[in-house]
Length: 218
Image (cartoon, rainbow, N blue to C red):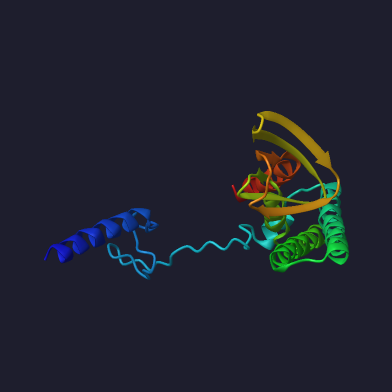
């Protein structure tokens, strides 16, 4: 029937699309399905590569050989731990003085998770524990976006920021601001201007940490 024919064409199209996106066998170069345990062409055992966002690309031995100034490790540790402490204190003060509703409680819970994560990353940097590079890169990457609009807004900082932003409406203008401290904002349906920007301070740290991993992995 027409329905079955259309279904077969759709299935074939989906299969073709999925196969194009699948990884390739390291032995013969043939595309391999995600759930395959063996290459169909050369019969080589195969395991699909998995990506874990929390896992470092470097082993503990490889990380240990990376030369990082002690001052950089101390700065990362103090920014992470100090920023987390300031953020949690400010959050607790705001809750104690004004109280919170259900939505505010959800946002506050997310802020607590981010600040605790920042403190954890700071401890990793001070101790130079395995994974400190990757985890701190993730943490500072979270700081980078600066977004504001009547629909939704986001900004996070734990330790410090140097924001460069463009206000699109109203009116169009660019500016920057900086501060040593902590701040967290998630708003929905608020009367705020449309702003797009980035935290240059956090972006520089994240790129620096990513560069250290890339050079060592290469």
